Amino acid sequence: MAAHRDVDIMVTMGFDEDLNKALANAKSETAKFIAEQRQARARPGDGAHCQNSDCRVTQVVDIKKGVHCITAKDPGKSLPSRGPPPRRPSTW
Image (cartoon, rainbow, N blue to C red):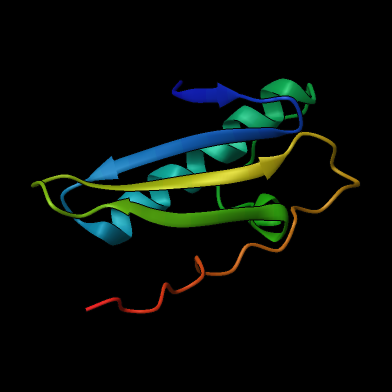
């Protein structure tokens, strides 16, 4: 299972040539990882993990597309709000 462990978050990934399948793979990996960490059983189609996960498209330039899901380790905490990066004024 591909996952990065940070102090307060978990990052899981999904890849496929079809972006919708990449997202489904990332969500599936997230559910499996959460179940493993919390000693619970992952149920197919269980979208409970999506409520506390921030899934973003991170790779579209190659044949395979990529999606990363960021999830708080503590189920009682939510992720900090992350909007788009601030725009820099043009200096031309």
